Length: 219
Image 1 (cartoon, helix red, strand yellow):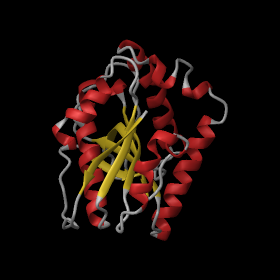
Image 2: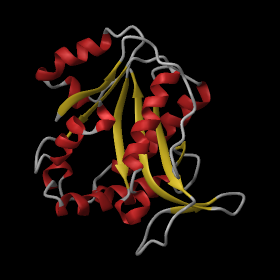
Image 3: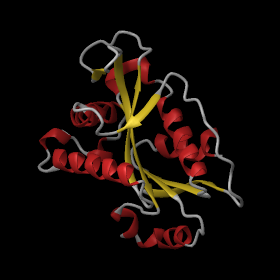
Image 4: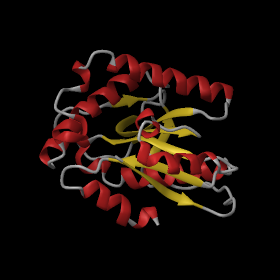
């Protein structure tokens, strides 16, 4: 993988409320169906990766068949909720992305009904880490200069550990990737952070790498 700095500012940007179109972000773990929503979305992503020639990114074995993976998702949601309740710094947070303005979905997709009787379609999930990166980043000797540079940022940095769109929702998830990036930018602004990092898969047709390096979202 390659580590990419999406943004780095020489000053603290002001905080402001952003609109994310039809998409709403809420804390992961606040609904009993969140674990299944994430696991089913992960399994569905393998079909999409195979179709686009990116089997090497996550392999072909379903996440739901991988020993301990579901328990790891549950633990991530518990860690996120604990960080929210304690309003802790250097937090790891999981967010669910959903919409109540959607077209009918062909097949099975994850949804929930809130206390007001409104149906929400789950279209993605996002995992944000403050001032910490994944072990695969720390273990890569080529990335150490970038990691050390991030540690020296006085206001800290935000690491996008996971961005996942649920391809089962079809056109309903169009634009959710952009919304997750915009949400992450706003998160960093509100905390006075001056940089956002993510890493991405560089194998296969390399379309993801081209998107990350050329998209106007990352400039």
